[in-house]
Image (cartoon, rainbow, N blue to C red; front, side, top):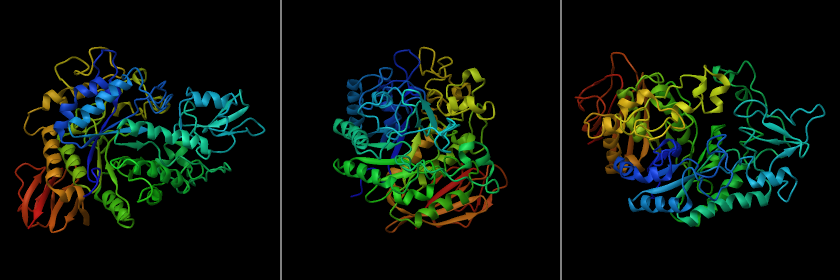
Length: 533
């Protein structure tokens, strides 16, 4: 019998933006409990919660000040236990986000390290150069040097992200043990696994060698868009020895038979085969799809061709999360704040749920939400948005409050108070109340495809084969034993359509109303899935 997570659909919740029950403008654990019937009705298998731990919120929870508690703004440990029991009672699993690469600078471990106490070597400290500048050329993913000077130690500490997120020194065995004990704490409490934030960054080059530059001739617009992208991050992170830590994590998970651990691998995706496998992580995802704006068949073929060369990898597949521009906007179907594109949303949902892998499905994706528009600099919460405004407005547009009731004011039922981040006006017509029980809505379609994924084992456990790119059309087959599904998607946003050879069989899914298995021409933004006979 296959483990529960193979082919599962995991619904990601960004807690502060999901549902607020006490009117403080921040979503909470009680809000998630209140919406469990809705989540279960989607047909997902598990819930992944972005960080719920105490945090000063410089990076909104990804700067952890205490790994083994719940931030009071979200609730209490007792409320977490109640949520966990209710999730399990509905037949779903619960997965927590773990941020083991770095902490908040307010974490007691860092305070002790900064003062030269017993934990003085728990973080990455180095002397400044003679002129006071940083020890090497490493650049932070969020801009500027990846080092911050602290006069208490007369040294710099390394931070791959914000300066308020000092990097743990996981070369130190005491540090590593303390970090991994966090996993045991939550697994003993009954959680079903973890998503590991930036799991490619656990170990750095202990000699602090410079990162090599990407030459100007090699750079594309992507590299020129942000200085950290102008160097290869092969010494501050993405070390092959990083797999050592992942193997230790897998050994811990193996002690809990139902546990599932997957990682985020944000750089150097070719290292995925070393980080995911029988003795490392169960699964992981790269940014091949999350960064993609082309929505071209070749993008998907290239990724699965890569996986075919490494058959030991079971992938996670995802189009959207709290760090990425929402799908319908990123794929060109609706500018931020424009109100979505139901046809593109349905096509993207159908493609995602027909791919091989464990699916990560972000809150609001089932509604076809477009990117929320951040109108002014004063509206920005994400510091990344302030860096290049208005050319890049940060990640807030993917984090706007979940719209529940179109008729309930500017927050659309998210909160009775002032929300921590403004709701997007374009999301009112896409709210749950506007789509619930409405045939033809994106929400109804998402439930239909999720149900199909459960009733067709070939979609959850089958291979993916014969991947073809026919102009703007992506076509592949999913096979399991004698069962075969022929999956065809026209990813074009507009045009006359494409003639695609017909598969003989039963039409089990169509994005284009009125399409049949005998219809050769496939219009733009349409798909058909045929059970081959």
